[in-house]
Image 1 (tube, rainbow, N blue to C red):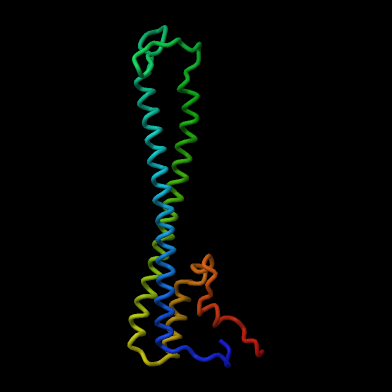
Image 2: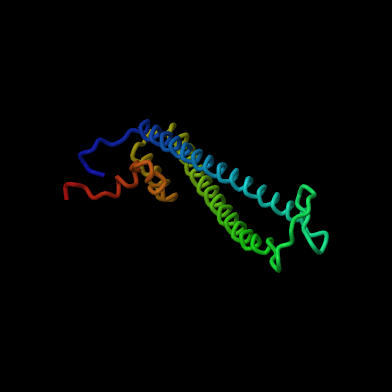
Length: 174
């Protein structure tokens, strides 16, 4: 940090940590909402697939000349082609898609947990610093926390610069 910048007070560092924690908690909440919405979509799609499988099982041919429709009616036999075979390849694609989206949900949950962990670390540090009276040591602890957690990428989407990033910038003097 530049020599001509006023050093931060412990109270300002405590406020900074609490603000960072609040921002991270908000991001974690947004990620959680996204994961929940995706899970709802997955549940709907799984229900659709289950319904199709149930309809398929209920519509299995009962006589050589026709098929029984879900309502109990008999329809014409499709010559040498089982319509379920065509749906089977669609089903494979649907299942692959479900697995992909489940992986996305898992990644979102892991990301949300990482945001929550860093938020908790900031809050814990804020509590510890609140009783401190050495601004330089407090700043060192904040910088160490941000380095340990690689904090800057967490704030990139918020267009917020961390103290670690500011400390890493070359001074304008030289």
